[in-house]
Image (tube, rainbow over all chains, first blue to last red; front, side, top):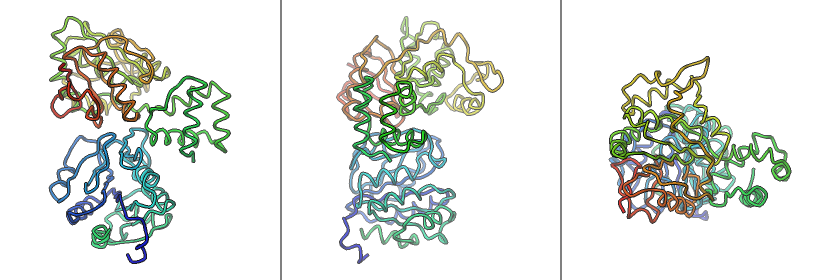
Length: 192
Length: 269
């Protein structure tokens, strides 16, 4: 993006997805090139069951290391992190994750809002938040917080989403910098 | 919204006025907790929130209860309980007497889960479970052994997924919308307030469980708590943490051996 040339370089890309976003997440992750100078964090609404299927799927498709986050893990560049089920994912400060098992937010734990808001505080303008398909309104308040800190907000084009409600809510109520198809998102991420 | 500097002010007030030390708590999480109660209780400004806290000791009780997270369930993480049952309980069984400490037990759901495991292994009669929490209100609930009937379907599912083979409902009696667990469980439990931040070791244990408590602490405080646990564990005793917690960042790491993939470690030296 030419107009973003003067922006802070991105240190963190947080991707939030719910219903209908599994395929999108897998497509994105399998197309990210190896030499990225930032961190990717995926917050995905999923069942609390102790299955590691998602982690295995992501690991199999990515050229980058994929890890499920543990409490107080250090945030490394060039790594794809997956938020664990049944915890909210926070940033204790820049470069340190923290987990929290307090009440669900938007009927969800992890909640995308919680992680976006925390990322906005810790990383201010160096974060990109991407919101994908979903059937509830999680993510919208988080995108507002990202925008307030001058980070970049991206939303999946609703007509390309299996469940357009979540991206549509965001477009209606938050300040969205880019509305993109999945192909455009992949190009955008690889160009950061 | 409460800002970082304001969180520091509140933490300072809580310590100076009431002796509650939240300085080693994880800031990101603590700030969310303060903001939550600030919104729940409809304060028009931070100044009024702070004034209420400073001038009304009754409000302190509510605040401490609300900022400490009390989310728990019976047989939370069934695979963890399966490992406990298969790998840990049999080795505890060889001891003449078994002492277990549940640190940060909240409303006691996991304490009763442990009692069920011990009962099924025929070890409950020679076991004592010390269950502690910073918050006296949750301990009051735990002590009663009364839980909502509406939860039993989920808990019974967790129990079965943990490898439980008995009739789960035989462990409680239902009365309207609540259930009460067997007295024979509660008689093997000792409930007491204990603050991991400032209180010291009070016994030696064969197993310490502290699940989803340390996530609310920063790394230096976590390390202090690990030392407290280490000084409260006999050799070849066990330490069990929440499913995303680890001793990896602590000095304990070299003396403890992890049991399989679960967050259970055995003290080797």
